[in-house]
Structure formats: C-alpha cells, structure tokens
Image (cartoon, rainbow, N blue to C red; front, side, top):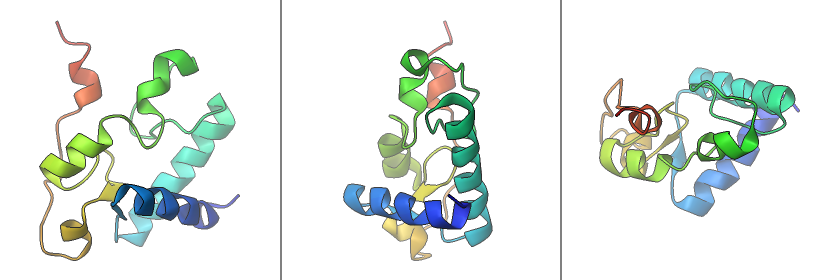
Length: 110
C-alpha cells in the first residue's frame, strides 16, 4: 500500500473519532509512509514520531492513533506528531503550537 492509499484509511479513522487529517499534504503523506514502515518493521503501525520497542504489549499506547491523541487534540488542536487535528485547525480557525509536550515520555519521568 502506498502512503497516498493509506491516507484514505487514516481519513476513515479520523472521521470516526470526529477529527480531521492534517491539511498539509506533504506532512500527511510523510507520516503515512512512517506508519507503513513501522507496520512492516514491527507488525503494527506505531507512531512514527516515537521510538518503538518492537514488543506490541509495551507499545500498545503508541499504536496509531495513540492513546494520547484525544487529549492532545482537545488541548492543543493536534496530536503529538500532527497527523490528526481538530476541525478548527483543519479549517484554519486555530493555529496549533508547533511543538506539544510528549505525554508518552512524561509517563517515564520519575
């Protein structure tokens, strides 16, 4: 499957959750390619912006869409990697921050 084809799968996921896909086509296709590469490498589509261990049990929370996406989109207007965005961001009504805190990393801090 090509990244362009995978975008349609991601669009369905976004629609079911009330999200939108990043309107920047270059970013969108690049992230789709990263998800495809991780699926081929690990057997599951882990977030391309976070290191995966290769153990699905350990990585369950970073399989796209990650468990942090909903809170990130609600609070910042986009998920950590920027694949999924809120409707306001997609429509240009809100500008999300270029960087948001990594909730996944925070769970490992003492």
